Image 1: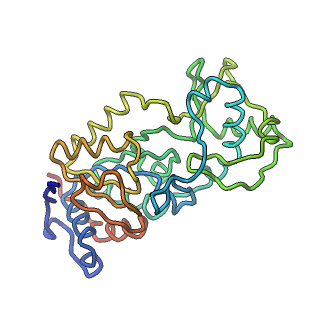
Image 2: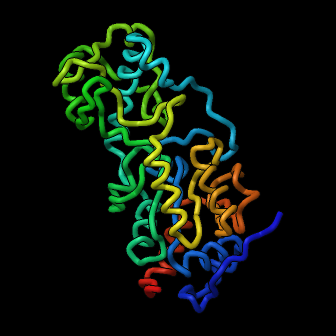
Length: 300
């Protein structure tokens, strides 16, 4: 494999310490960020420290579950009932989650100019909550709802109130939350759940997220390509890059000669394209990097 050179030296703004010298990969990531203008691609692993599980865990093996597909949701009233019942329980965990040290460090690096922009595969809104309000949410966000008939968008909090009113006898069974914000429920609870229609036209409501089997809107994909093209390098945080949705940006960066670095707990599908990889906890690692690179990067 041909390794892309990692630009920058400690003189670019990173003072090497014993902590950074202990890992060659971490030192390379620090030098990459020190040069400024880095695009970030984040995945589910960045949010695990906020109490939201990822899809694969540190082993890289997929967690056993059957996610909702776009085809099932749109074709079947029973499918929509299953989704909204399970998501009604899981939403409380998502809504109560707070940005962790990793999200805060990414925002610090963005404010200091070391990070030029953020693309996230996550639907939890935690980058926004940390202050990165312009993060491109590749797969949408669970805190928004869209009507498939009239196109109206509304807040998930509004819908949650309506669902609670319609299902006063519904009880949370305390099931473990899944990565996409729902839980597994007994069939009898799902069958009794009442789904709320659009408050304007009575149409079908869907979370404003990209389901399995659904395509990311082309303008959003292009926005991500543009962000990568404008950046000096690409840093992947907490993604196994198993699906092409995120891997394509890594391949694009490598193909156009931009260095790629990956910080993730476990191997990723993009490791072959990386000039540096670090297997370490995201919050602690990014916090250390942000502390060393906290001063603003000089404008180029």
